[in-house]
Length: 422
Ligand SMILES: Nc1ncnc2c1ncn2[C@@H]1O[C@H](COP(=O)(O)OP(=O)(O)OP(=O)(O)O)[C@@H](O)[C@H]1O
Ligand SMILES: [Mg+2]
Image 1 (tube, rainbow, N blue to C red):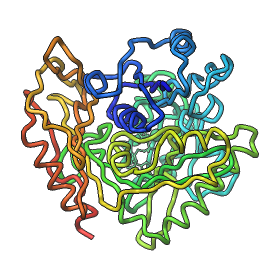
Image 2 (cartoon, rainbow, N blue to C red):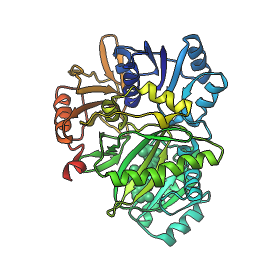
Image 3 (cartoon, rainbow, N blue to C red):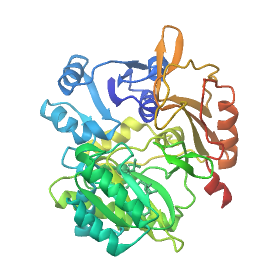
């Protein structure tokens, strides 16, 4: 059978690669894909992007199942459109994707269903937001309500910083419509982790835990990025924390969505903040897998991913089991010069290591130009490796990254540092 993966990042390369391992799968198309999905065995890129084009393609090619990587098409209703056309697709509907697409929706939802999360207030007028911040003081967190590709959150250390974030979002429209409403949140302290599950609308199957590194530079300094590396498992999610997250966050979220008449089917990503006493709080929901967390997670997944997605679509996830490689996995992102503000494109990439059982390079911002592989986006590659310990996975990933060269390449040297300190 043939599958279709929507998206072009490292997450989609890892997803498509994993789906192609299924013995039932002949070919996985990726729309639009990247230089890695163009050359990977079993994968093929297609340039289509509009929903009608994708739907026609899925019909013509008799695509068994479409899997959506990024949030934007989900928030725009790609799942609703495919379903209306009678096509199988994995992901939340437009209504369910509001959990990510509107932070105000997510906060109201969490309050309604009793999920632990930071105290908040929402505003559509800058003067009201400013008055609230004046009263609350700093540190405080200012979040654009809508999708802002990772640029919509300001953790403000001072009142002045929070005020300027409010002005930029609400008065100068720096994020367009996404910033017309802002959510102002209490600042939470602790350690973050990514907790991603498969949901069938009623049951959740947790994937392996992970943690990413958002800042550009070592020691978690520098500007925020889409993610400079990730590893799995995240030791901060102890078995006790895991059980509490399932009971206090994931299950109430899934039953809350069902009760509200918008059952959630798809990958559900809870961004967690875990305090010193191991209490988990919900920072946010995403309606899709994380990038780069997906790359180490897929490298550790031993079960047939297609089988798990079919269970989720059939509503039978309670009978599904995911088997994980006992080894740890760690992925290091190689980013372009100038990332994240102004990534430089067009540099030739050389020295990619051969894929091995315990090490793969997932592509993100790459494209093929004749025989050459060129950088074409901010995050270019994610070198991902397995090891008997996180330390060994890290050593393996960095050793493989060593041979890769392109002009101005940026790479953090300390991915995994928090877990390795434990
Ligand atoms: N209440 C909070 N207290 C402390 N830090 C926070 C809080 N909310 C968010 N943050 C920090 O800001 C980051 C981004 O916040 P959030 O996850 O809500 O935004 P996002 O733009 O949707 O992120 P992503 O791109 O991961 O989806 C978090 O990973 C966390 O580091
Ligand atoms: Mg988010």
